Length: 394
Image (cartoon, rainbow, N blue to C red; front, side, top):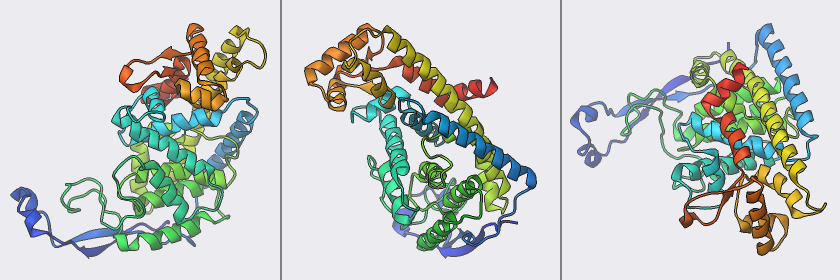
């Protein structure tokens, strides 16, 4: 048995001036104490999984490794594209929805819709997670979180206050889950990091447990879910399960988000297999989705190349790979990325529009931006719940 959480009684400091502003029906529920969770230390905990789950993990690990090696042979940046799908799905799990187009726009302009700006933070945070190479530590975790929340007013760094999930906004009384007291967060993270350094547990099982324990600790005031899912990639990369690419793991979790949330709840009760099995299945589906994205993008890029009769070495031959990385562009971005003049970039965009590669986006207030509609369509299909289910059913 994996140890479940226990609870401790903590004092709740009631501000009587604030209480006077709260409806009487709510006020009666705010007590002088509350119960905060106390997760068990897991750094040296023995893990025992069923033989069936062990075999399942081994099979998925092989499938992920094969996908990773196959994508490394491509001449365009598939990880950049899959990172967008991953970030979009991770945001949707938190009910933070925005189109792929608007999220890509938000990376270039602060005038994008508010939800898109928040989701764009997820893209940047994923990049930060994937670029880290040192062993996971508190500083690197905080760096991922702070990058995620950079465009918000949320507190940076580890929380110094009590947080809770569900219930009312006034106190943790009646919440569905109350994470540990803020004073315990650092010691729990140190234990988690020691667990993450272990080499006697399969990387997939370790990433799943690491994620569940991180969500239990809930070390930040906001953004814990998205940071925690970015850390799944961080762990798989550090353990060299994914050495070259990334996978839309959150798309696999979004496919059955109720099961995912249920697995996290089961972890609190000391059941570890549900979250391990959930991540293994999500990775298997992520391989299917990632392969589908890669195949569809190959077809688009092949068509663009076949239609391009410009001389070899022309900037038009470099534009498709750039659009894979950033499917919404403006002249300044194209000029800077390809090392050409602003005038040459405007001409290149004009030709790309004539060839149907780019389409102009509306709203003059945001400036002149252009989208690669075919690439965005592929990502929208692979990032929406309906699209993911269609892909999974094939």
